[in-house]
Image (cartoon, rainbow, N blue to C red; front, side, top):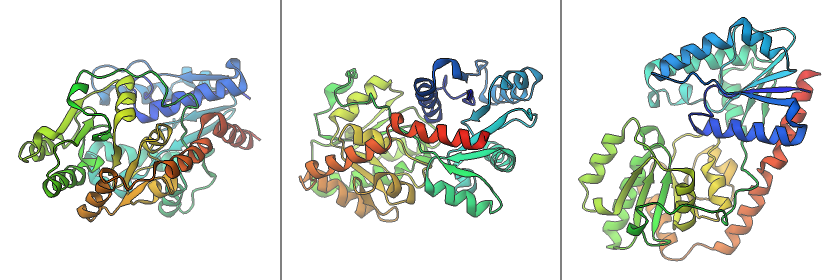
Length: 359
């Protein structure tokens, strides 16, 4: 069995889907041998994202691409798009990571939302196998597309080499942070990550407790809605206690994970939510929104809060500060969950699904 992974321009960009694609490729290569697995990294990413996307769509529908695909038994598109022109000699799989364009349309700009919807609808109808990363998303797909067939849950994973003992690079701003005295969020600082409730809850906590030690770190590049968040921070009495770092490297991220008091994951919606597993690997306490996907992945590890109640998030923050968090019990839960999601283990689920599709 020969497999081609098409990352949909994500590996070089370094998105979550890019990391997923790269981990899947490396795991398949280890399991099946380098000669049986390849990855297509579309390298004409220049000018605007729209221009790059258009070039990519032209390429995957070209004769040259069809000929390339015919060297493999199955081509797995990891970023929700499959070509219109396909070879009958090849099976086509596609991963739908989430249904945000249908469920939370205002979180995406109009043109990308329409593109996303159109591609997902077509991919679900035409792919030989549709995969998704959680049972929650599978239910959403089935509800929106009741005629959809062959939907398989193949979860995202965590690198088995990830460890709290890995080398990390101390960021230049580390002198402003006390060990285990800051709450952390990592990701694009944008509106669809629902960071408003996190900022408001942290300000409320500081106001009620008159605490001078704990800080909030929002680590990631600015996105849509960043200016609104920055205004909220700057207008508060505790602006000096809320740090926005801008883009961070993977090594800096690891350092932040290792030294934080807790990670706060306030998403309204997630397809999977890999930061949850990253917290578990590092035994970092996790406070997360009470949504189906977070319940599915974190189970009894997370401290959950109500998205409609800022006070419920403040309450969970206080549990960490007041020492009410049972590290020993939660760490055992984390280790059990992480074992389930190690790529070394779940790659076999992918291989079995590919074989069923080919047969």
